[in-house]
Image (cartoon, rainbow over all chains, first blue to last red; front, side, top):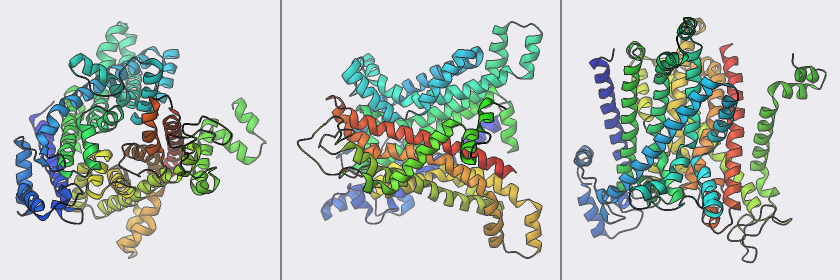
Length: 317
Length: 288
């Protein structure tokens, strides 16, 4: 059973992980040699007045834990600090871009789950030639990193086909989705292949399991066996892997957005890292780590609800 | 016994062995070896200076002088790929080395000392799992600037939890074996047991982990170079070359990006397949 104790422990683990991660990300400011104020100015060498201003803005003269508390409570209240390099509030930099990146992640996640699970189930249930075809497709997909897929797409669709825009974010919902199609496909290729392999082996394992053989020998219709005994049992591992994959997509947006000139937080993260704009990098890194941890926890809890044996093994461990 | 195996009998040992491994793995092994050789001797076998520009020979197609053509500033693409091999392989090699050393240290310390040390280290490893390698690398670049070192160190740290988690459970199993207790009774110190017996006995698993990680590290580093956070131009690096060639694709000159991208894919696939094969071998050897 999905006990409150299990959910509670997971939530506690989530909060502890996020707190430690936030200390690490904030504390990274003090890892580098030199003056944190100069670092926050983004590698340029500002005059003493500007440095003093930065020290005051970022509370750099306070003790570490007080600075940290100021930063964290700001984050939680939507005050994300100020970018010295862009001369703008981080909230304003992120506001429009978060939506674009979320759309990209949701788009890619949909492709991964629908096509990945679909191909994997098809290969396991049909077998034969379809299975071989899926093996070939997934082998190629597994070997296609986002940035290589991206340049192949840019080449194919810019000079040869011209079906999809290869640059920019677009405006309006339909146009934006249209612009996000190639980035989403490039981002999801490897993971579609991965999820479909996991799905195939999970479904195959269930097909050969004793209870399915028993159900078949009792003459139950195949359709109902597949639905109630095979897919239901294969769902937990497939969900876990898909969830892990989707959780990691936020970090992957950096490459996909950069490659197609999409104006999202991933591209902003790379831009700010290159310009050494630490204030923005810290906020986006925290956001991506948080998204990863939260999605993982949600998936853990859903998997446990689907397969109560997981709760038992988690309690044992 | 299959026909291939029958045919392999009586041939020299090397060929028989190659036949038993399978042609795909042999091919991948040859690709890996060739890449390693090129990485070592690259600067001497490159037909042209990889950084010499030539305003007249811009975007030249394939020709006897420039086998793969030239880029937007007239530099020879083949020479740049050849010279770039060293840095493209050295990065992942360093990541694997560093993460393996750190991971073994964490795993053996946790397994040997147990108790609160184990609990604390396991917690740290759990939390490190929450940081995707790319994010750690980006934060490192924001702190220390772009270049070869920051991404390599950051990725090494990001790979530690994977190594540590697998080896910790193996080390705990090993520690509970009777021979360790026997060594203790004989008065051997913890250090000497760990270094002379525990770690050497874990080596097969360590090698297996390292072999599998190499391809992934290569992919991550190539992506970081592509994003412009790693090695800086004009130094030749495969990831950098993919990025540098991208603006020219729209003008109808996709060569540089496509060749460099293809090379990344071929290298990663070859090292991955060989790595997995090595891992299988060493894991069965480790299981005895």
